[in-house]
Image (cartoon, rainbow, N blue to C red; front, side, top):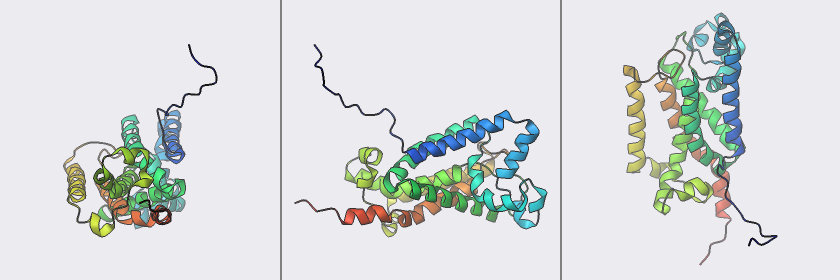
Length: 248
């Protein structure tokens, strides 16, 4: 017989930070809006939001959005995806790494890191594709940055006893100092694998952008931005840990 007044605590099936849910909602919302537009209006919207290198070689006024998009597209390109497969793939990686980052540093720093890594990805793409008139779209550069950032404490979680803390309490994991991270064999191998996989895109592996190819430059640029700069966004967590009492 069940007892009255007894409350059973249950763990939620999904424990995703609100900032990540908001990001996913924005990405999905943009894709829904695009599918409600005519092909002509959809193409206009894509170019308005997308990062187009040719804008910075004197052709800003040629593309939708003009000079305004030349400024905003450093961020807005992360909101556009080629198709549902592209959107789902990026959303899955965002859930995996973005959730740990947002839980660790909070919504504001998570969003700031997302923007910085997206910017770094676009800048790297621009460096390799100066004058290109095709649009570069997708959140992959920003998400690659979140992955690079997460690796700074993922391997520390393994050293502490497993990935449980990485999923459940990422704030409790020590941040791997950059000098140590750059010499950690596991992280170096993960970085080399990431670069190798993306370089394969040069030979036509995959198709996840409006131009029919992978923007591997953006992936690599975003990844290294997250890996190298995450310590600047993790300050609050480290400061808080310094004030925690030591138990003997």
